Image (cartoon, rainbow, N blue to C red; front, side, top):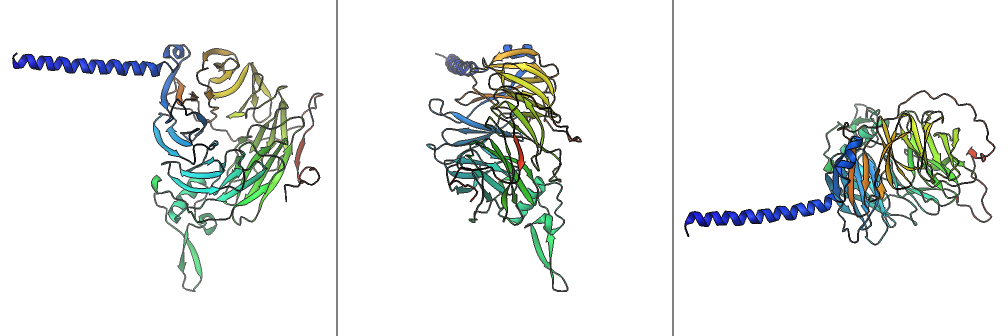
Length: 495
């Protein structure tokens, strides 16, 4: 056998091995592709798969339990106590971190400008949102009822018995503190001790008096964000009923932080913490409904971040009695209410000046978020998924992703998404996020929108609303009150 013949046969063998490898890879890829929505089903509606990704979980035993979209990052929690972060626009995995013990329940995470927090069992973990490094942890003083909420200076955790605990998060060095403060409160230029806080240094004047001078702003690498681990006492406030729904941060500045949370007594509480002294953490007001319960977090309409009493800042509360209530955030005044006639168990979705409300038995209402007026109603839609500038996407009772015309509420088409039981309610962008419980995530977008639409709530003058005409079937509700409601004998959770 000549040398040329040997080389030829060797090349044939290498080619055969390569062909077999490609065939095997193709079979594997085809098996994965079978779990995706086929492009031929998306193209007629102008949709496409932007990306798909597998969460780091064993499909035989692991499951995706919670997820959160926040400022371009998708945080996913599994039942094996792993928190994983993805770039929400590309699907690139950023990091994956075990948080606590896998046999304990891990609740829905919350994210801030630089941090992300999650509860495993009764332990709070706070991580660097860029790297996934655990920076701080703390054991709560009781059983946790729902996921936490992050504010610029504190993390708040609701306990089942109605107690809301607050723990201060302090940056480990002044440079990091100043960088974080500047990102969270752009209106604060750190030109005085009041705005600089602890991010200041002392200098001696000629008269011997001490003055405070701001530290020069330095770029801080994302890996350098660190929290102080020095133990500090927590603060708490009590509410009536069990807190089983995650709170929502409603307002924060350098002086105060406010949050809202419902309880199983049909009450929505709004509490405020004095950030400067931390001596006052109290209930500012509560709102009580009649004939129903609040089982979903309130929806927040942001206002002027520099004005704590901005009348444009509103809370939208949905209840199982079929009503949606719009409250003025800073004092709880009822601005309007809308009756759907059916129980509501999903949080309203705010897109610009539109408020989308879905009922338990099937039906989506598009309301004017300022006035509460009905724009249109679409039947058999049970969960809001996302919205673009022309369409609304929702899931119906047959597990179809329904495409609805934004202007008219009429159906444009539908896709079967029964293989994806997790459908994220995205009010941040126009992207559609679907996931199987085994961890296969799929992001769908409109082909004409390669860049995401970031929904921004416009700041428009809010006129004083006239009292709504009472309807015969409308139950009465109690607006904001200065005192707690009557309680059973021998039970006073405010002490």
